[in-house]
Image (cartoon, rainbow, N blue to C red; front, top):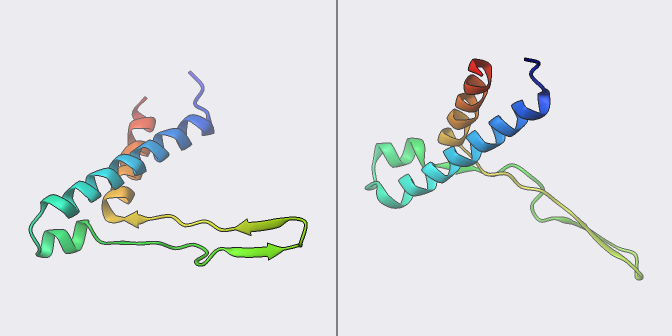
Length: 86
């Protein structure tokens, strides 16, 4: 069976999303302490505030932001591992 790069990206994306969801659940459910500081903290690289170009007739806004936590990165690695085992 031939593996495609598209399926790999889907596995990584789903793994990252599930890891992010688990991180948010942990942030809400876990008591304040070391576990919450390590697993539930995140950073958001991106364009903040978004770049806006006003051309009078047309107004364009460009921007992106991603929220990365340790659990989302672990989910991405798990998705790549599961893809490799497929």
